[in-house]
Each structure stands twice: as C-alpha cells, then as structure tokens.
Length: 371
Image (cartoon, rainbow, N blue to C red):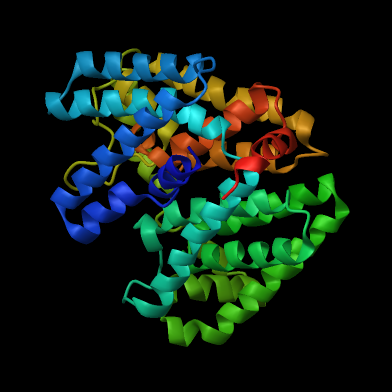
C-alpha cells in the first residue's frame, strides 16, 4: 500500500498529468492522467473506508449541475471533469488521511527542487521558473505550502534547510503572491513562537543569494528590479506590484457576474477565452459560472477550515498557516475544480482539522510501514 500511496503522491503533488501533457504530448499526458485516477480508485479499494467529505461533494455537485445546465461547450469533457472531481474527493480523501505531514512536506520538497533545476539547466527568456508546475504561480503555491509545513519540523538542521529551499524556489517564481504571503506567514508564525522569527533571517539569506546569482539564472528583469527596489527602500518600486494586478482582471468579469448572479453563465465561461485571460479568482469563478450557491459553499469550506485550524495555533501552527494560504490562493487562480494539487492539499487540511487525529498520532501509527 505504501508503494501505491507514494506513486499517487508523486503524480498529484508534482503535477505529473499536466507536466507530461506539455512535455511529452497529448497521448502521454492523457495516459498519465488516466493512470493517476485509476491509481486513486485502486488505492481507495484497498484502503480503510471512512466518512465521505460531504461539503466538498455538495460543492462539486452544485457547481457542475448548475453550470452544466446553463451552458456546456463540450459535453464529453464536462462529464470527464465531473467524474475526476468526484474521484479525487472520494478516493483522494483516504490518501490524504494516510499521508503524514512529514510525507507531504518531503514530496513537496522534491517537487520544489524541480523549480531550482528549471532555473539552472533550462534557462529561458521569461526569467520566472516553475519546474514541474509549468505556471510560476502554481509553483509559488507549492513553495508556500512547503514553507508552512517546515514550522512543524523538529530537527533544526532539516528545518532550516527546508525553509531555505522553499523560500529560494519560491523567490525564483517571482510571484507577487509568494512575496506577500511569505512575509505574512512569517510574521504570523512569530506570534505562535518567537523562535520562528529565525525564518525571516533565512529568507533574507535566500534573497542575498539570489542577488549573487541573478545574472547566471537570467531572472525576470522587471520583477527582479521591483524586488531590488523594495530591498533598497525605493518608494517607486512598490508601484510595480500593482501593475497588471489581479484586481484589473477581476473587474473585466464583474458585468457578467451582475447579469446572472443566481445561476451564473455556464461551465468554463470564466476560464479565459480569446483576449480574456480568465478571472483568476476561484470565488468569482464559482459565482460567475454557477451562481451564488457554489460560491457560498466554497467560502464556507475554507472559512470552516480556517476556524477549526485556529485551535492548533500553538502546537500545530502549520495548519492555520496552510488554511490562510489556501484561502488566499483561491483569490489568484480559477482552475479550482480540475486542479488535483489544490484539491488534494485542501482535502489533506480538511481531514486533519476535522477527523480529530493529530499528525503525531498518524505518524506513530504508520511508522512500522515506512519504506
């Protein structure tokens, strides 16, 4: 079972279905995607069955039913996406329940290394690196979740190594979301334990290293100049953070939301067509495509996780930090219902703050079976 579990984690946490589609073509990508979901079904078949995640199932049913009744361009694609969502919510829940925080952190650590490899050996003119995750913002999310998990590591050497790597790879994405959330998470962590202030020092070292190797890595000059200006105290540098902001992209879709706020405009209508880049906000995507009900359910789920995670603020601070990161990240992405990585991290946190079993108990429980 551990072998199946680790293969499934690699496929999901490294974004293999999407990566192989782009790297090796449609045939290989489709086969890897099918294999991922068949593996999840197989894992579920052999694993212990526990209660279903009803809020996520209701969310998916409401979203797909309402948006599908309003408008669907490709019925076959729509049905496949609905089935895949159900599989990852039902089968992925057992995979998440059996995944310790150490395993999750380790596989995200390996995935984030692909960002570093991308910057060293596959330098491009864009200067924002993403590794397996293809999109710099998606890669930034991986680095942020990994960074949150580092606060649960007891071994100091490993902890600071992981903090440094997740911070450095996150910086390489040059995601404005990463910079803001990394600082926000770091400050919040200090309230849980003053010793966490050391993470800010490690982050500063990562930035200094980036300045040293920026020319070699051929980083994005525009984003790098903004970072350089902020570090040097240039008052004009902060203006670059607001250029081409997500708020401008949200505004493009507001009129369509106002025209049909109850049932939305149909499946994938907010995902980007022609000159439009997509709404880049999962909450607005939900209301824009399927109306107010799915959006309220989506908000309910992530607010619920945040509230439940707060009781772990002192002893398991990684949980509220991940809850904050998830809720915030949904404001800058719009492919929520077919994003295996986002869904799995959400499921993992949900079961960890809802099932009553602590990370320590799960790690002790699974220790004899470790490879």
